[in-house]
Amino acid sequence: MCRGAEECDKFWVRVSQDQVYNFASIVSGILVLNASTCRFVVLISGRGSNMQTIVDTLQQHNAPGQVCAVISNNADARGLEWAAQKGIVTQVVSHRDYESREQFDLALGDAVHAFRPDYILLAGFMRILTPAFVERFNGRLINIHPSLLPAFPGLHTHQQALAAGVQWHGCTVHFVTPVLDHGPIIAQGIVPVRADDTSDVLAGRVLNLEHRMYGDVALWLSEGRVTLDSVQRVHVDGMVSRSYLLTPSGVKRSAN
Ligand code: GRF
Image: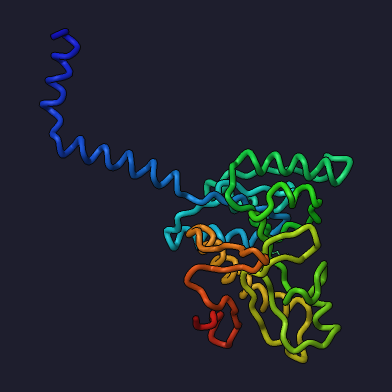
């Protein structure tokens, strides 16, 4: 027996079999956890309150998923500071540095791809994405829009809702397609519109709903429960209904 083996034998005598098993199970546990952790990249342009709710919801539920990066097209986006304080990697890819929308989307796509995300969550990301970008991340790109799609796509949705005199307004979480503010709906929620609402008041009411819904959707995605069928309809394992309502006592999800 060589000297090295002798030393090795002494080592194994000192380390009990139980300790070896414990160590092995911790290592394999870490490997399994890492392998099954759903990776999210969140794209923001400003305040980032939806991004915050996604991060907090995943953490609070000990979900098998995490936000591995927050990327913004705007260096002054307030949400970047919050994410950095949470220890999340942040990055800026400014659209101002690129001559065309196509070039910007290529650079943005490369930045996103580098984090190997399972899903890319658009959370107040105020850029229209090219079909090439949408194609690149097809089936993995999710958006929240502050209206009851297909009503009121585009900007100023709360003004549009007030101008149209609708009595119910809301928000939608959906898969992204090349058509603006369009795609298979994952969750949708409603708020009442009051006669004396301003667009800011209405926006605040809708935001309560957005936070609850985007947090829930991030959880479902992390748990691998969200699928698209052959006719592009969304299914969430274990959920018959994904409709929400803002009531005086808070946000309620419809019973299954
Ligand atoms: C949200 O209302 C979102 O639906 C819309 O822009 C707003 C962004 O808010 N697209 P925040 O940056 O998530 O606070």
